[in-house]
Amino acid sequence: MLSGTLSESSYQLLTCDEQFWAQSYDFLLSCGYQLRPRYHPEWVPSWGLKRHPIGGECDDFLKSYNTNALDALCIKDNQKVVLKRVNEKELKIFRHLDTLRSDAKNHTIPLLDVIPFPGTEWTFVVMPYCRRFNSPPFHCRDEFVDAMTQYIEPPRRA
Image 1 (cartoon, helix red, strand yellow):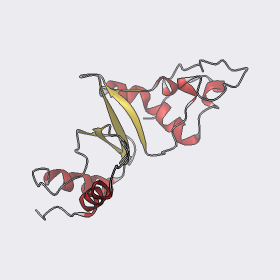
Image 2 (cartoon, one colour):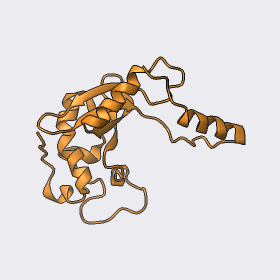
Image 3 (spheres, rainbow, N blue to C red):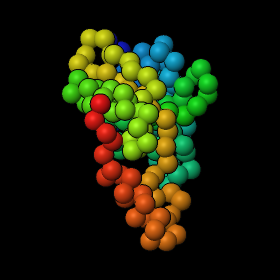
Image 4 (cartoon, rainbow, N blue to C red):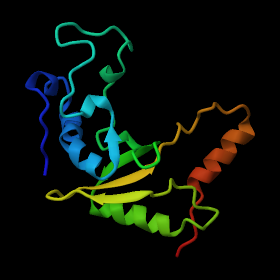
């Protein structure tokens, strides 16, 4: 199911993990999720192939350092989401936690969509794009303690 038409020179600029996302671009687009331009099958670096960009002057220069998750755009509602590539065991955990959504102690990120990836052992789970846990920064000890309590507070068993 993996197919991508990135030019060889552009393809070589991607890490092995990024190449997976580039090869998945068309499939995910057909499911309603658009990856960043860097992973488009016809991507040509905005800085050109001859020179190297300085710092963050080019958005498409930024690599993904998380091998199994990537931000994307939900085409239907133009919302930023995160796609995570999971195996069957992880999917069971995601689905179980999602069944506990009504529990006030369930502070896990909601599951928006599940996309089986044909021809592979992978499934993509779609979640809302969230900010880092410490953004904005904690202003007092109580905020920090409250956040940590929520992180370790288990939901009730179903």
